[in-house]
Image 1 (cartoon, rainbow, N blue to C red):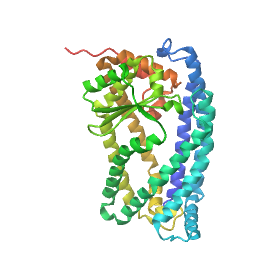
Image 2: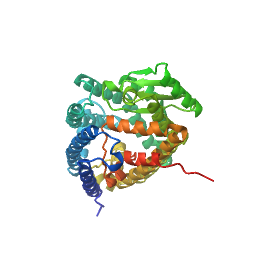
Image 3: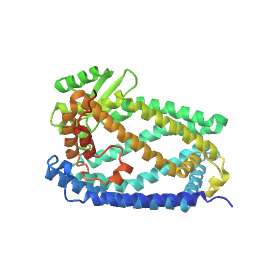
Image 4: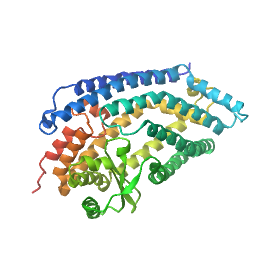
Length: 424
């Protein structure tokens, strides 16, 4: 008797939903606490705390509904054989168009087109409610309904343009890969990731936001001096109009080798009290670069990608596995989808481990900025950003340990306030 792979996958998905819902309930209880954590009393204003509490509870309520609907749909799709049914219907659609259903690339693209249409339809009510009800209610949403749908249409067009060549290449690699399939797949994804990291900020991101050089002035001079002192090869410094969509703030870096660029959200500049806080936040980000956190993370992702493809090559010819999910044939894309579902337990463990490492990196980057003399402005900047973004002030320790890639504000402030260790 064949092993019931599909039933096992659905069972584990439900178990994980129950476990994560338990963590969500713990976090919801923490969010409803009527008082600030002791370390934040006198640091965060009561008004901001009340606003943060209301915003976090609204998001938590929404999250419960969204996750419940998601697990229902995902479990039903697998358990009731919707995937093989949809694969067959996509083949029927090709016949209707007079195309060859034996061409796996065409069949896969037809299948993905249907999946994209379905996901857009099912996700749309949640996206609209999140953006135009919750985010708007708490003063974050700045985009119009026209801009929302324009962004959605642009995203679909981008996916339609770049998706088919990538899918076709993966299918051909799997069909022709032979014993070195895992290496070929990893090599392709490695090159693709480098190409996308290069092209996204140049060709794709400007489709959605406007990037302008940071004007000459005191802030630009301070950032350039900081970059120069760390030998960071800063070539361009941009401000992005994040405020056209949301009042949430951010900053990031990108680029290879001697061609680095920094992007500041205009909301970050607006929310920080002074230039020193903005520079302190960037000192933290540059700490990630100086301490090679970005490189370590990239290497970790490449290793995990290679291991995943190695695992896929071991099961891709398992007829029992495909039949368990209702497939009589063994399409490449379906094999990848099934494999991703079967390794969900490992993915959760890996995600938890990566979060642990990420939080350690955040503490190290804070310490780096503090060592440069930005301890006080970083502290005040983190507090200001926490207030302006209405981030959760009270967090459940189990929830944050499992979900958070960044330490809670209380922990970060405690680490910054800790006296430097002196050596004899």
